[in-house]
Picture (tube, protein in one colour):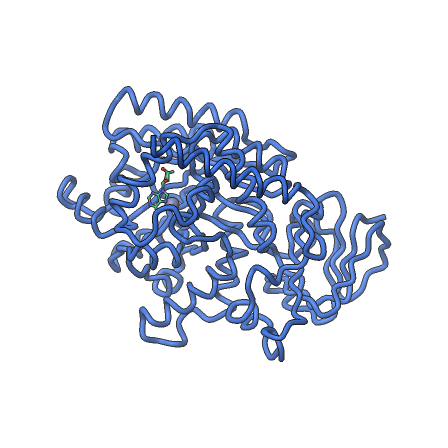
Length: 432
Ligand SMILES: C[C@H]1O[C@@H](n2cnc3c(N)ncnc32)[C@H](O)[C@@H]1O
Ligand SMILES: [Zn+2]
């Protein structure tokens, strides 16, 4: 007896062999996908009728700072350097463990509601982010964000905390939590520190999550201080590999693109954040053409200002088209791949595709809406017309976290109330 059978669905498997199944079933057992097809001989405790809906892999947000939901709308319309140094970092210095817990629960709620089933996070007070992930039922690859600013003592302390977090949480919550090392960026971490982090990560067999070439200022800084850009600098210290998730990668030359593809680096494209902070346009079409693994992320809520991966998909497509002045750039199916299959590859998880033996991480999108009618092409509809609000049901590891628009895994009203109170208390602490 299976746990769940979803029937009468348009199944967008994202598997090249299975393709789309117009009137299909998905069978879930023990947290995994047992069967995907046109019909099934199985029976289950729970049957979900997905008539008029699309069942697809849950979206994978590969670059987030979940706790920053508390800073939604707190520092808008600013230059990145002042935004980060004058507003965000001073505010983050006042965050407590409890704040991060509530902020992360709020992020989990928002992600579950908008169809994200996994996310990669880099932040602080990470034990409480992990606790929120554990409680909510979502899947996540978590890293403690490390910055040494060239100080040896700071480097020692940061790496110690990063390692402690990895050893405490990797594989926890029935494997829903994995961990990564999170050196912040090549212009906020020293060369020596980045070398140490890479060595530690290889030794521990743990992936790395880092910001790279988000801004032109970083490019100039690296050239001035090291005589080369971040991509060549990181190549020089043997940092690159399939174990690295590099967020942003906006300021790339054609030579840089070749290096990233050659080393199999995973690149998290964050179009909304890049537009809001006017960081620039990442050469996503060129990266994909070169064979690099490009996935999608929202970045934190202070630079987006939501965690809706549907909005991110549409923006990615539109930005690439206008950036290259080519409307055929980044078509809908390719964007869907970025948000599912490629994201799973970047995090090293068996999700992102509906296929036997993979994690039962999926969403049901209700297409019976005015803005989703008529339905000529499912991929096009999902990327260009749908939004996170159309997600009806969210399932992670075979557990239903939201059903028929009702969040079942967390007390939504309680979290909303606490988030409002937390942000009020925080604002008064920041001002004092
Ligand atoms: C992990 C650290 O990364 C910071 N952070 C959040 N958003 C960005 C961004 N767009 N660029 C660089 N750093 C960022 C967080 O504020 C935290 O300090
Ligand atoms: Zn970021």
